[in-house]
Image 1 (cartoon, chains in turn green, purple):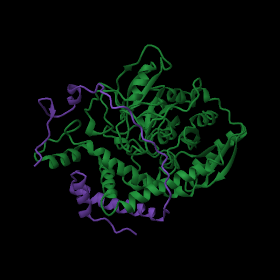
Image 2 (cartoon, rainbow over the protein chains, first blue to last red):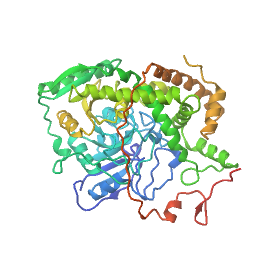
Image 3 (tube, rainbow over the protein chains, first blue to last red):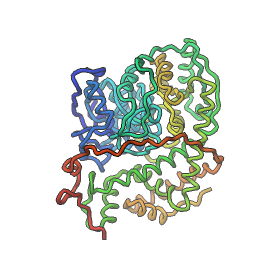
Image 4 (cartoon, chains in turn purple, brown):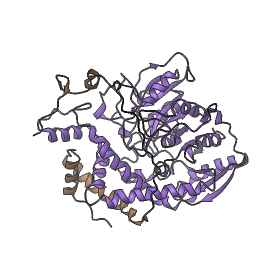
Length: 424
Length: 91
C-alpha cells in the first residue's frame, strides 16, 4: 500500500521528547529535509538532496516527531489528482480506483491509510483541502503568514501556506501548534496571535452552540447533487448542536478561478526560472550554448502541466498582455478579499463543500486541463483572500468521501478548529 | 472572444521561458491555450477595485551571520570548478 504513497521512505528521528514524541509524520516532498532527497514530484529534482531543513521540519524534530517518508505529490504542486507526479499516481486508500486529490495527495493518503499519524502538505489553491476531502481526513490551510515557508520549494509565493493533515481535527491542530509562529527566515510570518497558555489543539472542543454559519450560494451552484446533499447533512448536524446557518453571497468568486490561475501561473513562471541545470537539478547532456542547454534541460526535466503553467504565466506577464491578465487578476483578488470580509462580518464562519465533485477516477481527467482548473472553484478564493480554512469529513456519497470546508477570518484558526471538531 | 493563440506564439513564449517543446507539444498547447485563454478573458468583467494593501516592511540589522558552507552549496551541482558552479558557455 505504502509504495505509491511515498516517493522516498526514510525514517528521520526527532528529539527524544516533546509534544509529538511517538507521533509519525509524512512530509510532502516539496518541503526540504536535510540529507533526504526532496523531489517535488519532478524529474527535475529526482536526485536533489537539500543541504538544510525547512523550518517546519526543524520544528517537527524539536517536537520529538518521527518523519516516516516524503509523500507523493503533483509535480511542483501543480494538479488536483497527484497524477502529474513524475513518480506515478497514488491510489486513494478511502476510495480504491480513485485519485487521492492533490497536490498533497501522498500526505492525505498516508494519514488515511494509517501509514502516518499526521502529515504536512502545502496549499497554494486547495492542495491541502482537496486531498483531505477526497481521502476522508482533516486538512488545514492556515492564514497567510501563520506558518514559515523557509525551505518550501516555491511555486506561488503570494498564495501558498504549509499546513497539517490528521485523522481528527485535534490531531491536525496539535501539529499546527508545532509548526506555526514567527520565523526570522520568512519575513511574511507573523507572531502567533494566540494566548500564551492556549493551543490550537485545546480549541478542539466541538462546541458550536451559537455559531453563525454563512453558506455562500455561489459555492453550491453546479456542484454534484450527492456532494450537496452530504454537505447539507453535515450542516444539519451542526445545527442540531446549536449552530445556525444562513445564506450569504460572494459575487466575486465567479471570477476567482481565472484570477487564481493567472496569478499562480505568473508566479510559477518566475519561480521556476531557477531550474537551469547549473546549481542543482537535472542537467541535459545536450551540446550548445547557455540558452540552448537551459531550454533543453527544462524540456527534459519538466512534465506537461508544469510546462503549461510556465508558458501561460510567461504569456500573461509579457508585454501587451500584463494589464489584460495580471492586473485584472489583482483587481479580482482585491474584490474577493472585500467580499469575504463582508460575509464574515455577518457570520462567524463560511461553509461550503470543499470540492464540488467526489474523487475522480484514476486517469479520468488528465487530458483536459481547463476542466481540472474549474474543479478548484471552492478552494482558490480562500488563497486569494489570504484566509484560513479547514476541510473536515462530511460523510459519503455513493461510498466516496465528501469534505466540508469552513473559512474564517484571518488568524481565526481557533474558531475553525472549534467548529470543525464537532464533526471529526 | 479571444483570438485563438497561434502555434508561432506558443513557440515564441516557449523561447522566452527557455523551455524547448517537441512539435506535438506545440500542437497540444496551442489547442489547450486557446480554451484556457478564452476562459481568462472573463476577467474583463471584473470592475476596478481599490486595493488597500495593509503591508509593512520587515527589516533587521545587517549583521554578519553564518551561511551554508561552500561545499554544501555546491553538492547538488552537475559541474563545478575551483569551488564555483560551472555552466555552459554563454555564446
